[in-house]
Amino acid sequence: MLATLALAATTGTAGAQSMSPMRGVVDSFTEGFALRVYPSNPYDQRIRVEIKVYDQDFHEVRADVRPADFTLAAGASRKVTVVVPFAGVADRKVRVCTESIPFPNQQTQIRTQVCGKFLGRRRS
Image (cartoon, rainbow, N blue to C red; front, side, top):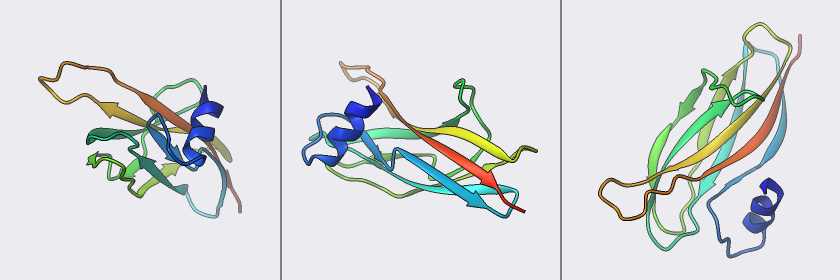
């Protein structure tokens, strides 16, 4: 499913919420590593999204996400910066997820999630 969403995001008119890039490797010489992702809204109406960071087992990770939640206009995308601490390990695999949040008092209350996989490697 993740591959299908990535393909849809690169072929023009996407039919689902997307984020790019979907994968990455970051080398860092500090106590954390930074990522820049671009969630986008292919729908013809605005959506509200929240960016969350999880480990490989989908346990939430404490990370600095700016902005962490916002509204995307129809057809828009936005730059989001994510800084993940290494937390005492040399390599850290995380999933950065764009999650749509339904607006209150709407008929449809569907919540979607699109995640990318990233590896941070601490160099000394």
